[in-house]
Image: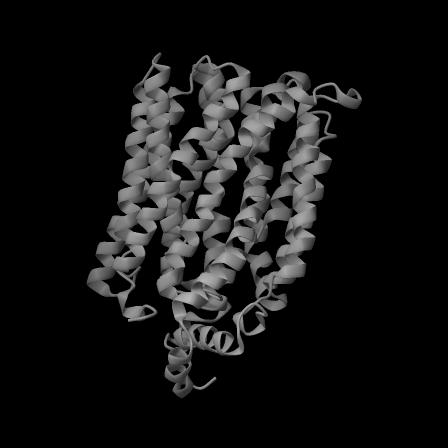
Length: 449
């Protein structure tokens, strides 16, 4: 579509109505996919309450099994995202979801630590490409000025996945002994089935680009597709190609930042049920308590991302969120023998951590576009998830060496503080050189300006 047609199309449609249609049609379903993703990624944390004793798995071995998933995930992420740019989001995400659902179901039948480790490695291979693929998908449907709120809603659904933790603990106890199987085995079976079902639904209802959207009028399709194409055309060609995302210096710095985020996020998510158990919480209550930090984070992260969209500023919003997470972990870590204060600290950390995550996922799209965005975020999400391995593993080592989770929680806080510092340095360098992450995205001409 020629650029000369954009003003007339904009006059012919109500852009707010178009964005609302896209939001209502796509985001709830994408959010559901994310809920299932995090359910199948973290269900091992609840399963461990029974599984570790039954299979004779030590704290350090559990940390390795929980975290080794991220090695295979990291190795296959760039390749997975390259395929996605060739075959399209619809086909590739469908493959990803069905495959990881099958692997999750199969995990129910492991009989020891070696088989559990193999299952987690296979899960990493299966899930690789999902998150960057979804970011790429959002960038194809939402103009830049609307992207932050869109991503905040996705992270909101990630937070809502915390509600499934009580359901998981319920499965653990309710299904224990059914058909002669332990509750933790049923947990893997019953959490793997939704991924397979939703994978087929994804293929049936999702389209790769606005031009193919039947729920929009012809004029709305033309305007939205034209807006996305206009933004792409307004950026240097060197920022579009797949290789550009891999070569970018900003990409490699953000990998380091994301390692810090995933270290803390996955370390907390996979060990939090056992941390609460160590604090004296009864098994029946662990799931409900574990859900609190992510649920409390929902409103703040939405408001914070809206503010980020209004101002066009990303790095400062991330720095503030990461700093809040660091303070929360400090409070939780220092609240020795004070469970109530520790839980308050974890709630503060959750607000900062999830808000930081919601801001972070918008940052690559401020300097990468098209296939480069898929490549760059694939690199960031893939290599950055090395922290996803290190977080659970280091926590297991610390717990085994000291008999306490306190040092690990303090390390979580230190990682988030480091993420804030690195981002602040990168932002300052970018302002001086104009070569790193922009201090704001206002130059991208927000929709409606």
